[in-house]
Length: 398
Image (cartoon, rainbow, N blue to C red; front, side, top):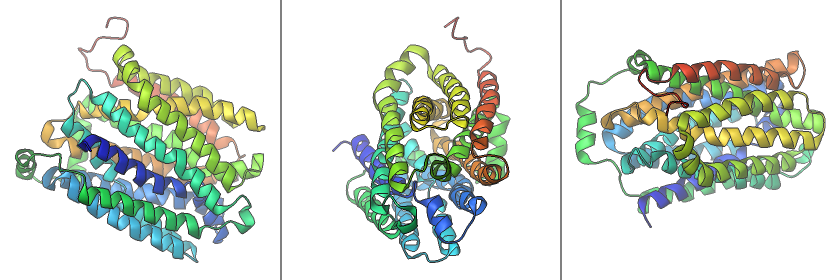
């Protein structure tokens, strides 16, 4: 099997395990005695740890190679899922999410792997295929998690999904150990090792000193706040407004993942060649502005499906386009670190979004987090304009 195909399969299986947890996590936290505020904080803890460790994992993957980082991170992820299966208090659930988030930066390593083996011309397409593998994990993972949990919140089984996630992550680990070759040449690893060691603060300072890269990282931050405001409360919102159980939520996330995979696996390549990465991010801004405002007013199932369809199409355009743009701002020896910084910015958004979402949900009205997401799409559009190189042609001049 070719390295790229192997990587796509590994990412799919890894995200399948992660996706299993999505529809049950807030409901699991409620089962263990937390309120909406704490339930959304538990969701955000994963991303808080990802924020802290992503630049570290990125730098280590530049220095030691992509393969060792993937192996160690997947091993620790297995432990985190086992702890979740055993959780009988909110603090055990917190511990499992802290451990899992600490190694979640391996996705930046996977994206760095793609940049190692692709050219700038076909990178967006390859990033899209990797994103499709990511999305396909969300096609089947949440559906499987919902089915394993059951449809009744009061009697839902939260142990089986956790065990299934551990087993699937073990399959991904086996693929890395026995099938996936190293992508980073010894020469580039030596070049990375010879670079002065920089703290996260120093790496961040370097990133923000580059105007375009700083704007792209800011886009990643705000866009993830937008999306995670929804993720942090969607299960609770679905239960309160539309009476949706774990199985319903799982099947809905399956639908979202299918749309993402359709965009990233088939459409993003030709669309990017025709319109460019920035235009794809521009469509995301439009979809977020309209879709989240629509979702904030929903009181019927099919109206919710319409809003989530638009949002999913926009989200499918975002990640591969942004990863491609960011990778083009990095030298060969620093791609892992730069992508790690970008992912850390997104992780900060995934911390802030859920942390705010629970309080907004409880303090205002259930659709309020979605309304805030719509408003935040406006600064993303402004940042997109600011991220253009001074000598870069505008779409009308291209």
